[in-house]
Amino acid sequence: MPSKMYLGLLASVLVLPALGQSNSTGLDAYLEAEEPIAIAGVLANIGSSGSKVEGAADGIVVASPSKSDPDYFYTWTRDASLTFKAIIERFIDTGDAELETLIRSFITGQAALQGVENPSGGLATGGLAEPKFHVDMSAFTEAWGRPQRDGPALRATAGVAYARYLLEKGDTANVKDIIWPVVNNDLSYVSEYWSQQGFDLWEEVQGISFFTLISQHRALVEGSALAAEIGLDCPNCDSQAPQIRCKIQSLWQDEGFMLSDVANNGRTGKGTNTVIASIHSFDPAAGCDDATFQPCSSKALSNLKLVVDSFRTYEINSGIPEGEAVALGRYIEDVYMGGHPWYLTTTAAAEQLYYAVATWTKVGSITIDDVSLAFFKDVYADAAAGDYAADSEEFTAITTAVTALADGFLAVVMEYTPEDGSLAEQFGKSDGKPLSAKDLTWSYAALLTAKAARDGKLPASWGADKATDVPTACEDSSATGAYATATNTAWA
Ligand code: NOJ
Ligand code: NOJ
Image (cartoon, rainbow, N blue to C red):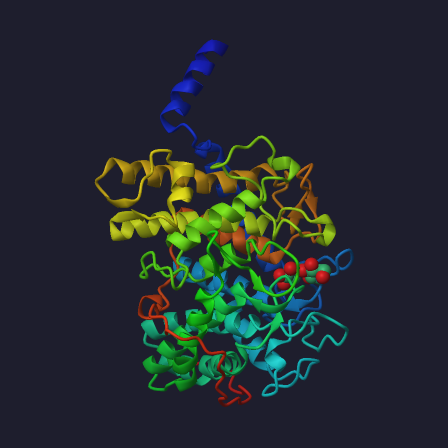
């Protein structure tokens, strides 16, 4: 029987070599247990067979089963598309046929939804950016923060991800006949409207949102590449993507962070909008490119540090020193539901850091410059500007410390996950108790992609490496393309 002292000794022996690192054994066990809960949580919220969303149409993702306080029993194009992006990545990894059936019903459902007249317009008159619909796919006609121009872009990205998979398998017919018509409508929308103001992903700010721009840029770049692969083209994608890229750079602040929104809203402008943007823009083939805000780029790392530090004032974060993970919300001035940390914003920080480590490992070096120095000093006190090759002591020390920091963010999520493993939208800034919409689909999807990143399962490249040149003069441009009802839903 080991004595108490022996256990203490054992603990210090185990912990000492990895000082500053979270207890990864506890985290491993949590994630192993949480993954099946998260996938079940996602599936329960998708119609028409989802156990918690009776009445939802086929392939329709309900944001949460919660029908009051808050009422999230709707389908948001953003939540649905990000959820399906995660499902598609999981399907490509596991080959689970049940997931592929769902993916097809999602695309078929979106083809129909694109044609539903709504307060933002019709198919060719702005309606694609309507933020949410009833779960039976009818229009939601009450007042709302509309339009939200990230939706069409995110939906295109989900469609392209599945199309890339099919093309690799030699299935051009389904891509050309079924997926492309849906994707093309969304690309037309983005090309036409990206430079106009709209509501941000948090549905509050009328302006230009960093997350929206990043989503739009990615959609046009990969949409154009997909078109080329099936013998078509997207000239408007090609003319507009560089202009969006130009606009993206203009949101950089010399203090070292990306402005969440260009809007007159009296906030500091730091927020996890930008961290979610970085993981959404991740391309494992793009290195640490600043222009596309890759997770390991100097700008994205500096931004992450400043954003994380802006949340240190939450009571549950008190006493945790700089350089260590804390619970993150949307932005510190948030008052929605009282303004608390969210699960999906906290997992986003972890996901960015896992992607950063994966990229450094892939390219075989880490570069520290003046922009990223403060971030690196937080995790590795001796950090200095320079290039560190994979066989250097610094490389090992930094990748170990950054992985530990990433684990730290997931350990925060672990700490505030209730015993049954369910993930709501938020958790209390003072007591860590789950808050707001229960069983939030996006929370579960975010947990799944963060865990996949930790497990080294990286999403496919989307062509960011060919989209790094920034025009010298930015223009708030626009190009009008074609819209056509996507009628073919007969999967070959
Ligand atoms: C509902 C939105 O979903 C949420 O993001 C927002 O904070 C509140 N409305 C307040 O505007
Ligand atoms: C409020 C969030 O701010 C928004 O991003 C989300 O789309 C809706 N809730 C639905 O989950």
